[in-house]
Structures are given as structure tokens and as C-alpha cells.
Image (cartoon, rainbow, N blue to C red; front, side, top):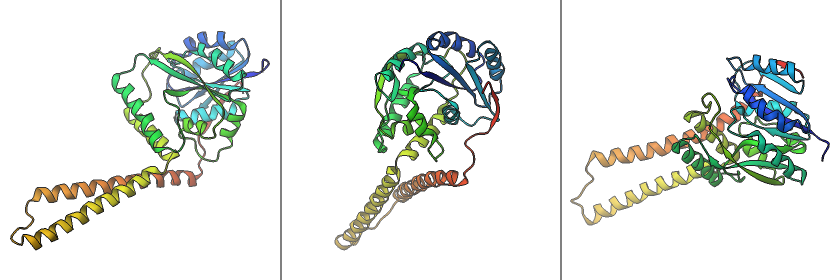
Length: 309
């Protein structure tokens, strides 16, 4: 385990100000080993690709894949996994929120036999209270709904053994939620802990709506419980309606002079039932959308350019 190839995958999208600072910290860590650094340009519109090419001229261990357009962070990671040749494969973002120095500890855990080594955040700086709470809620929700336990407080900063990467590359489905796919088989797992810093430069590419879509992808990819919950809500609303009918019949029998009045009650009932119906249709639609995407069988991404590969 001492003589191995280390692959580092870095998805990038408009990260021109982070490329050199990242490499200045990453290369001293990885140069102790045989290594390759694979940048995956996810359709960047700034000088990200140009700056990476300049770095390749200085260091032939750096490689670049460029997409025609933005296909998303998870697809960029998938492309990196398919290209990586390493015995150990580390994925890390370019914004320096995840410190490259932690890779040393990850490698040691891997050398002791772990197939997956997660970098787990024990402190997070530079993130709003809202972001922290919604992230915590997301992990609680997905672990409540999913049949596969997803590690909390971890992102895509992890080390995978070659056999785990091979498993991911052989999957037939489009990997919209790699965190779940990595956890699903049950490979031996270890953790290292670190303090997550604020972004070195630039703005986050994961806004509120992107995070919501990412959460929905994770839930729909690893659980059918939302469909079951929709069924339960249907039975609940039907049961309440049936009890309401029984109540009105008994009321009419014992108090014939009374009758149902008030448009507010009707309005509430219609809104309640209509809301349940729309939510149920939406849940079913999400699953149908997943099926639709899979049967189209389109490529996960389109590579425009490969440099030093």
C-alpha cells in the first residue's frame, strides 16, 4: 500500500481565482506519492480552463476534461471517476473550503484497510445560520425517508478505494446523488474530521433552489417512502371526510333542525384536500420524471476537450 497511484478529482465551474491557490496547497500534499490531478471543467464561462492549461505546461501530472456546457457537479465527479486511474481516488472542490492537508489523514485510514474515507465537518465557518440549519434538516429528512443511511455532515470530499470507483463506474443509472450511491453498497468506512473554512474566492454555485433540487434528487433516488406517505395522507383525508359524513348524519338524526352553514369550512376542506392531491401528484411526477430520464438513455455529459489524457 506504500507504492500506489493517487488520483485527485476536482470539479470546477467558474473558479479562475481559486486554481493557483488550490494547487499551491494541494501539490505539496500529493507530491509525496505517485499522483494525478484531474480537473473537470463543468462548462465554465471564465478563464478557468485556460488557467488549468497553463498549469499543465508546468506539471504533467495535471489533467483536464472540459464539457460543452454545465452538466452539474455530480456529473463532473462521475466523469472524473471514469477517467481516474488511481488506487485511491480523492474528490475535492476547488474553493478551498475543504483543506487539502486533510488528504494525508485520509490516505492513512485507507492504508489501514478502509475502502471509503469521509472527511467530516466538525466546524463550519463562513456559512449562514440558515444554510447550517437547512443542511442539518436535509440529512435528517433523507435518513428518515431513505432505506440507505447517508453519513451526516459530509459532502463530496472523500477518498474511495479503486474497487469502489469501479463499482460506481459500472452503475447503469445516471448518478444524480453520488453521496447515496457511495454509501449504498456498505463498503468499510472511516472518517477524518476537519474545520470547514469559508470560500477562498467567488460565490457558491449552490443557491437555495439548487440545494432543494439536490435534496429532492437524493430522496427520490434512494427511497419510495414519499409514495407511501402520499398513500397514508390519502387514507387520512378520506378517513376525516368519512368521519365528517358520519358526524353530519348523526347530527341530522338527533338534531334535525341544524344544518351545515359557512363557506369558510368548505373553503378549508377544499384547500386541504386539494393540497394533498397536488402534493401526491407532485411526488408521483418526480418518480415518473426519474424514469423518463433513465429511459431516454442520453449520455451523462459531453466532453469537448481532453488535455494531457
